[in-house]
Length: 312
Image 1 (cartoon, one colour):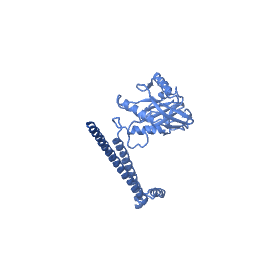
Image 2 (spheres, helix red, strand yellow; image 1 turned 90 degrees about the vertical axis):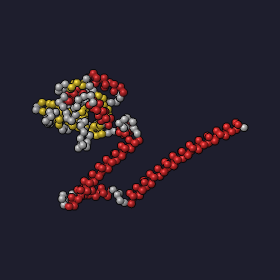
Image 3 (cartoon, helix red, strand yellow; image 1 turned 45 degrees about the horizontal axis):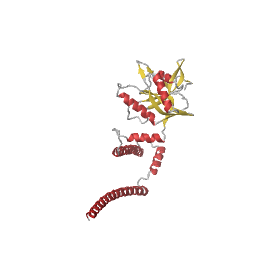
Image 4 (tube, one colour; image 1 turned 120 degrees about the vertical axis):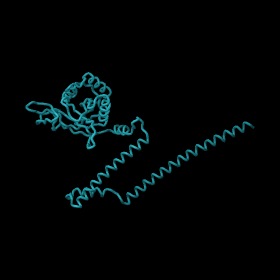
């Protein structure tokens, strides 16, 4: 996606990156792509030194102005002192293999891991441009951060900018959304339920569910505490009253049916339904055990009767 633009900015790290107009395309990133890249980095991090990068191809399809990035495959590359050269023969072979199995998927771009763009990334991008004239570059930061709330993923396009009187391609950040089909949602949910041993058990599933519920309650409690503290400070005059904020808080409180007869009746109904299900479960198990005992008694009685008749 090349276009003439304004002069880009040179950051301290040396990579060329700017905020441009972009191509106007809408990018939809599917969960399988994130899982594949994370798995690729995890496997390679056990065999290479710390800080090693991984590189692969992005596969997807374009529908009008919307590009769906749905799958990936890994690529071989050689890391020199400053440059990284791709194995073009391996890339072409993998592309043909995936084209045979998934005829609708095309090479949409490439991905790598790291916390910033490197100088050698533009050369790799030009290599991918031989397959797709307008590829995208996905950069995933594998470092964990407690302060980060968004996905550590950035998608870049390229634009042609005039820098110091010379035309030069630079990476321009593009917006994206995470999208998934019904089958993908089911698969991701099932993967999340798998225990480290590779087996799924009801105990682990319940533990995972309860842990998620606990974290959600903790987050809700912390946010309510922030709102309550803000209201108290407004009441005491420590901070200026924000009428718009107070109206939003009031609207939120009115929507919560806490302490009303309706919510109490609902909780009692759910509690009674749970007890009823437990009672029915116990009764069913008792009936099954009783049926098994009766069957054994009948079988024993029939055997004795047959033996008695043979004696006479």
